[in-house]
Amino acid sequence: MKKKKTDRSRPDHYAKKAKKDQYPARSIYKLEEIQKKFKVIRPGDRVLDLGCAPGSWMKYAAGIVGPGGRVVGVDIKDVGDLPRGWPDNVSYFQCDILDMDADVRKSIGDGYNVVLSDMAPSTTGIKNVDAARSYLLSEAALEIAGQLLDPGGCFVAKIFQGGDFEAFIAAVKRQYATRKIFKPQSCRKDSKEIYVIGMGKKQKGNE
Image (tube, rainbow, N blue to C red; front, side, top):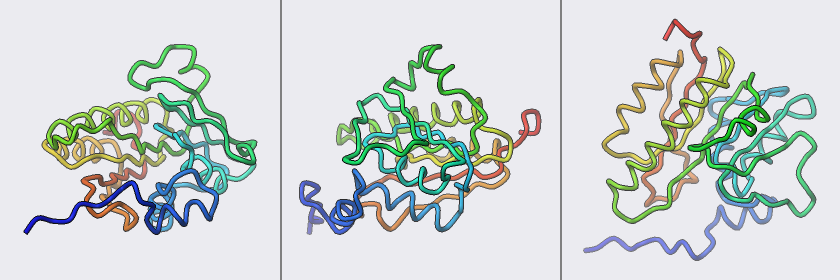
């Protein structure tokens, strides 16, 4: 008997809750679960959100870091604006992180405490292809975190489970004191996505 496919065109519980809570997308609750369990973001932190559109993670992170912190987002898509505007501690850039020019990189800066990546590729429906594309994005996020994240910082990245999954886990383990694998309950049941969390970025030379 074939499994019944999930109809993603219909808003589920989390999509309805996001609308009620005034967030652009249901993905907010994935980060909320990660934050409640691992406390990756703290007041006053500088947070870099890779693949930030449509902005739910930026808005949520901005509320945690508060006026003393900063959230910077990057996405290939235009993020747009919230109905009441973005908080003062949020800024974002529209560019491809796989081809980021020097001016944008300079504007983004460094000295971050947290790097988040909820990036996902345009899916084909072919599991191996989608997983490979997801790995490339996750690998790029890990490289950016290696360059811009302060020692002791935290890294969160979504990746589709596939042939390169273990290689990515090993890379995170080399660079962070603690590595966790977590699938939030708010992920869709039929999704292959999972989150890899690195805490305590090691000093260069200690990896």
